[in-house]
Image (cartoon, rainbow, N blue to C red; front, side):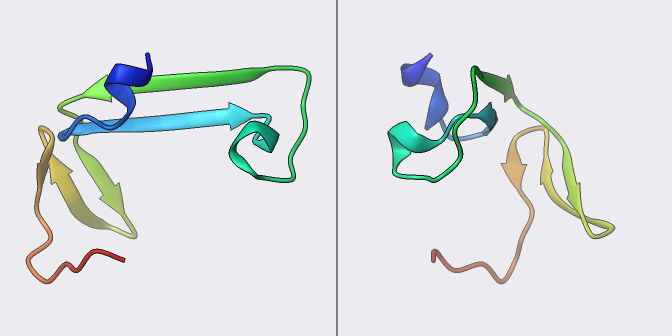
Length: 61
């Protein structure tokens, strides 16, 4: 799964323990889900369509 987590055009969601990543959340389990070519809306605005970034004014943070 680690090979899929940083692939362009995917969305990765993790729920559970984050201590292994330097976080402060501990849980008895951790679950990851990765999807390819998703369509994602945030606050009523589309940001991904079929895995393609739609943001016109986007800078890397």
